[in-house]
Picture 1 (tube, rainbow, N blue to C red):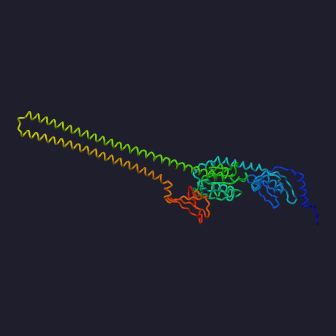
Picture 2 (cartoon, rainbow, N blue to C red):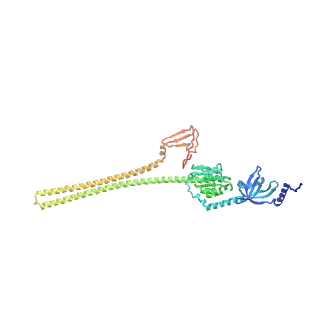
Picture 3 (cartoon, helix red, strand yellow):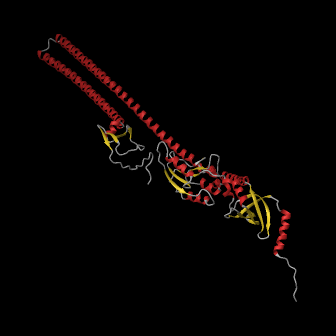
Length: 493
């Protein structure tokens, strides 16, 4: 038995649903906070999205969404440089939209506006939360505690090649008025996009310890969302924990990131980092030059003082020697006169005794008298001999003292002359004549010293001055050979 069923066509049912939806919510616009799960743009400029609402990783709702070409252009103009960072998978947006229903495609959301301030505010909120966490755990001061060398010459550069920030940094370092040379190893990485954080982390991890003076992380200007890469918490921890002091130069004058807070030093731009490195090196160079000048001045003062001391000592020694010699001669003369007087007194006493004895004992025999005279004569000779011996001994002592004094004086003068000669040799070693005598030459071109900025052409004349003559040379062939000129260290090959 055939049973006739009453049926409806799908198009009729869905048309009725569309009518009900249109009557209920058509042209009713509202603000919606939602996350972009998928997004694609066709050749005409229409943007198709899949939006989700989730809580703690659990999807609560899902819907298709559209941004038609006209609205897409307006939204991109509003977002400006931040468009690519906002319109991407995983981004949370606040959008002004309406719900539409199609009998062919079902329900979807039509987005007509996206709030830029909400996206930027969310970035700042997350940045502040991460900063508070870094401060609490002590990461903001960790890298600042590392010792920074006086001269920053060995540099590990973490940046993206062929960018304006990289070019500005390199130009600032390479073009400096003192021609300082820096050893820069480049660790290339992405500084923008979804892969920027792992790329920068990989570059930092590949930098060896105890090799570089500093690590420099730079990125040129961009939007706030472009620079949000450097607000990543894991990247900030890696910078703070780096074994080498880190300098950051990210964005423009008004930008600041978590990388700046945890770095040892932060600068507003890549050029500012390079300018500081050059300035620090210049300050050290000036300090070395001033120290050299001070040492040279101290040396000259010491030479003058030593020369004056030698002159004064020589005069004092000469005067002392003459006075001492004169005094010894006077002492010897006095002693000689005293001895002679004593001898004469003794002889007179003996003669008086003999005369008295002769008168009192005249009755003694001639033999005894003669014997006594002999005894007296022997005593006289003995006294004379002893006097002469004493004089000779004092003369010998005086001569020995005089010789020792002369020897010591000559030795002291000789030692001081050797010191003076040594000081004079050090001074003359830097004299231009001495330098030319060693084989150096002065090369002049058109009345100016020939240096690295001089330009030579065939036919030019060079004036070469050596120690005792000059040569005028006309160039017939020129071959320029690059030569490394490094003030502080030799170039690393």
